[in-house]
Structure formats: C-alpha cells, structure tokens
Image 1 (cartoon, rainbow, N blue to C red):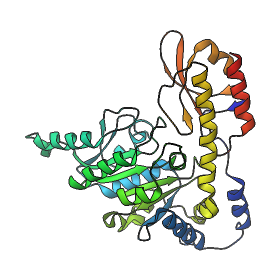
Image 2: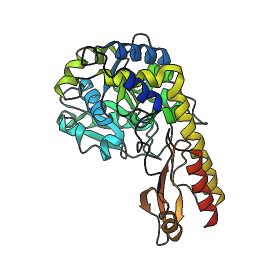
Image 3: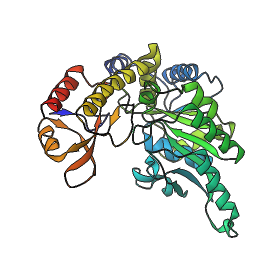
Image 4: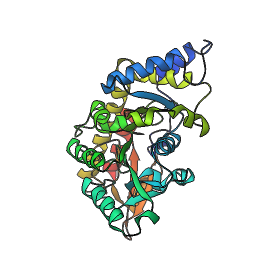
Amino acid sequence: MLRFECDYGEGAHPRVMELLVKSNLEQTPGYGEDHYCDTARILIREACQAPEADVHFLVGGTQANFVVIEAALRPWQGVLCAENGHINTHETGAVEATGHKVLALPAKEGKITAAQIREACKAHYADASHEHITQPGMVYLSAPTEFGTLYTKAELEEISLACRELALFLFVDGARMGYGLMSEINDLSLADYARLCDAFTIGGTKVGALFGEAVVLTSPLLKKDFRYLMKQRGAMLAKGRLLGVQFTALFEGGLYFDMAKHADTLAMRLRRTFLNKGWPLLYDSFTNQQFPVIPDEALEQLGKEFSFSFWQKMDGKRSAVRFCTSWATTEEAVDRLIASVKTL
C-alpha cells in the first residue's frame, strides 16, 4: 500500500536524523537554551530577514496556535478566522479552552478577505450591545489553507493593512509553510510574512522534522513573557535541544525549501494527471495537497493499492478525496499512482 493520505506519515529527513544521532550524547542546557536552538534561531531570522524577531520552538501545531493566540488576546477578545480554519475545525476547541472564542467567517477556498475583516469589526462596534459580545482582537490565517490554496502578496498586504488600522494582531499558521513558499504560483517570501504579520509559524512536523514548529514573533507586544506562557501551557519541551537540532538541520543549506519543492513538483504531476483524466479539482491548489473529484468505482480500484483521504461526497456517483505528497514521497510512488489512474 502506497500512502498519500497525509504529509507526516514518515519520520524525518535523514539529515535531521543524522544530526540528532550525532548530538545524542552531547550535554546541553534544557528548555531551548542550548546552542542548537540558538543556531536555529539565527538561521530562521536570516531566512526571514528579521534580525529583531523572537523565535521559539514548540512541539506541535496545536500548542503553537493556542499559545500565540492566548498571548495576544485580552480575556474578552476572540480571533477571526475562516470557518474551515484549522483552529475552528481540527483542534478540539483548544483555543476556546484558553477562554478565547473563535469568530468564524465564511471562506472561499479556505481564504478570507480584508473586506470581511473590516466588515466584522464594523458590525461588532455598530451593535449597541457590543460590550456584551466577544471583541475581535486577532486575525488567524493558514498558509497554505486547509485546501492547499494560497494568499497572494497583494491579499496579505491588504489584510495586514486592515489589521493595523483596526488594532488587530495578524497571525499566520504555517504548518505547511514550506509547501506554500515553494509553490510555482507563490509570490510571498518568509521576509514578507515577517514584514506583514505580528506572528507566524514555520512548520516542521509536516515538512521533514520528527516533530516541532518554529514560532516567529515580530510584534514587540507579543515578545514579553512569551516563555512564561509556553511553560504554563505545557508547550515548553525540557529537552528543547531536540527541536533546535531539527530546525538547524532543516535550515542549513536550504534543506527545508528543497524538500518542499520536491513535494510540490510531484503534486503538480498528479494535478495534471487528474485533469487530463477529466477529473475536476474541488479546490485550485498548487501545493502538495490535491483534491480530485473521482468516480466512486475508480476510487474503489485505487483504494486497493493507494491510501488517500475521503473529503466529501459530491453526488451519487462521485466523491472528492485528498492526495498529499510530502518531502519523502518518491518519484516511483507517483509514477505508480499515475499509471494506475491512466488505466481506469
């Protein structure tokens, strides 16, 4: 069985494992105060062209999301996000468990707009009883979105401007950041995210690490005492060097970007194959996630050799599914899938 249902089915890139093994018996301070974490911070700041940014390493995406959001918001505030945003649909109410409401907005292919953000804030303050209603205090975006779609630089600039005018923090969840950055249609860089956002994450879990996310804070308002909150919320790893080692390996020599490019290139081969077969795409994704709409009989045949994620039933005869490539997907696996599709 060849697995295409997610992008974190394998362990870690060999270079990550090599550095973990090489440093295994080395003694270092704990809690992210070791020289590997320091090196990884320097490499990430350089990649982001943000020398003043604070960089923290957390064990997973859910912890990164709720800790950043809790650090930013006052007790009476909530976070605006797309209705299908990860914090609203796949984190078991982790943000709400911190006492902050997720304020969901209708989304088109996983994206929200600056106009929607402005309208949500306008509607809030126009309500005579607004002091009895959760106040918007932050905007959360995913890059790429849950559907593999991307914000353009112009869209992110408009959202950033709206957030600054409305005194909202802007936070981008980059669990799959690498796959977005290396997409053939992407026009954003890490430097753009650092310039336009108050905080964002660079995902390792889905892009070549065993586990771990880097949180990049550019707003001075978020930097103070962030580590206190990490500790309180169980997001500070005692053996923090394990995160620093991994992100050092990922960012030395551009490995992070090379891996992501590999996955995107293979996903584009699948995209072309599905379209040439006459199978439409549910979402117009140019990243490592592809969502073809496939006749159920063909899915039954594909399911004998390949695993993928069911997404939604389209009608009585077709379903939308998700195929993910990753840093570890091989050319041979994609060749086999393409060959099988062509026979159906």
